Image (tube, rainbow, N blue to C red; front, side):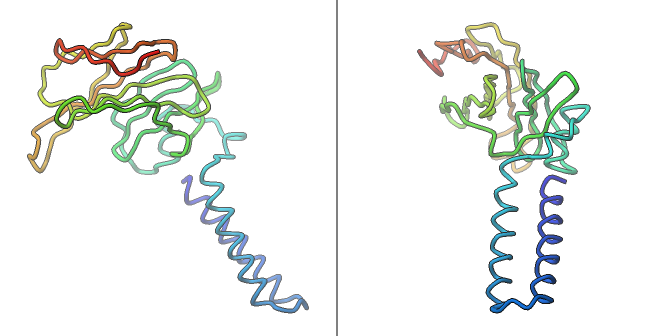
Length: 201
């Protein structure tokens, strides 16, 4: 819906302006037509980075706010933060702002990688945030095996999601997600008894 609304709005604007130019008496109508097209493309592109509908639309759940940006896509996991929620979908992640009345949508542009560290093999630990909020989320991805002990040095609660490797390249693997605070430094995770420093002061 997010992209569809912008595309439809851009097309309507382009059609109205093009018709106005055709019926007008201005010279260089072809030039004006190209300028209008260029302006429309730029406007639609820029609007994709700034969800202006947040000023008028509040969603009743993080799932609905995610589906507005990625319509028809499944949601695997929702992890609650203080000012935001981290939503894991089968397409991508979004960190959605929340208010007393509900949730706002967010653009992929709002997702910022704070740091990322490859641990061993295909396992990666990444800390994400919404560029406008302080909540941090640690994502430990591509962890093989189904009996992993995952923790950190600040006692965070980790939520897990199992992914089956249809190609059988790696076997089944897990993703683990937890909300952490920006003051949690130095920050270490523990995977099956092995402590790994992710960030330091």
